[in-house]
Length: 467
Ligand code: ASP
Ligand code: MG
Image 1 (tube, rainbow, N blue to C red):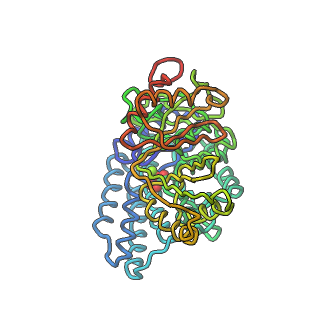
Image 2: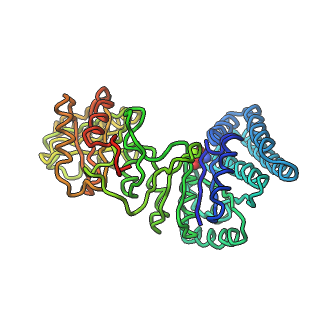
Image 3: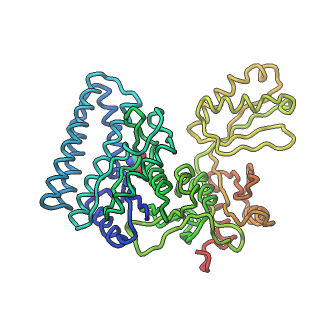
């Protein structure tokens, strides 16, 4: 059995869904289970509708646009009985949504719980559309509402899955459908609490649903169909000769996504990783490409490095003081402060002199975080034991990633050597002891040049078996 997940753009129009139909037809014999996102932009627009309703205005024009888009897509793809049935189901869903939005308009109140209910309609609609298209093409499929199977806690908008119960339900419910020769078309992203209240697993979480399904039914592979060719050696907008990586390990994929490459969020892979199920990333619109396989086994790149990734628009917050080494609770208080603000700390460095601690954060978090830190450490700053909490703006982090880096000497030397030769100044450096990546901070202005230089110096653009 193979679990195939199609993202928002892959189901975003009648033409795209036609591609999905062809893909499903092609791999039909392998026993498929399909997980879908909402049609592209639908989740955003549902959330906007909910917000508008909360402000007291009925979002009538957005609602009719939503109705029209699903309606027209069904008419373009399905015929006869299938078409009528799907139109009717969608109509019913939109009426239900309209009632909920009306309620929000009257109450002028929007809880995370209601946001989840409203957001759930995107996937609930897309499975009806795609299933109708498949059936009209003679492929026996049926829409499946994941809320019956994916059980979560009540942390609305980012609910946590009850794995044991979810796995049990998914395998008991879905495997018989596949054995009966049908293709379940499952809503990604959504689940429900023990009481049956609708929840969502976080934005972009359809990948997670796919991985949950795969883990539960012990699928051979998960295929994530999207609009890119796979994981790449670098961002192709920055590096002309960036290439698709044929194979990477789970760990490499995780490192790459932490550092800005749009691979798969590590959490979404977890259920598949646990069972060592390979995950394949493929392009719905370029099926001739094999994509990237992410698994526990992978080749080692000749120089140990597989990719150079980066995150732009960052700031460095520097906490400086002679007394840092003497006040062991400084770190605890520092991270308590960032945690309370929900500031994501992208990188941390501290030299062993313990004279300063550097935190790398997103530009948009920097002012607020510095304010909070100044408040937390106001006494230390007043008495002079902390000299300064300052910000350095306009930075970017670059990460050199590869499983083969572990124990391979010379990677840092090569990286920093080439940058030194070209006058790129390195502001801070970090390497986790996993040795899967070396990350460092440069000025934004140097970002593209840095990525290009490192990409070239490790020969990542060159042909060879390492694609
Ligand atoms: N439709 C949801 C979102 O936009 C889930 C997904 O696309 O994976 O966040
Ligand atoms: Mg999406």
